Length: 152
Image (spheres, rainbow, N blue to C red):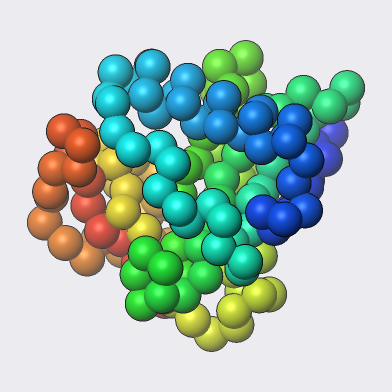
């Protein structure tokens, strides 16, 4: 995989163009590709502690994105979500690199606090490969099977 440039910013540090790029990727992946109309704009992006993590390739192309939410926003612990890889960059391990970077940033910003996520059920083994453990039965969120997972 070519060199990744990581960008970590809070909402008030994002340019209008960056925000547009992130939302464009998220809507294309979660609403269009997964044919799932849901409230993409949930107010959590603007929290003053939320971290927006972008993976860019040489030339500046947005290859992947996720957001890291501080404790108490979605779960009592830290959370991350909206994990998205652009179509042209899939199948190269970028998703794993995004998760590794998110775990690292969570530990730096909120040391010792567990990470809790609501994962699409079909990604259970993906998250387990990063140390996450299943913490709930399957439930439907926006018509898609999910499970709660945690990393202590």
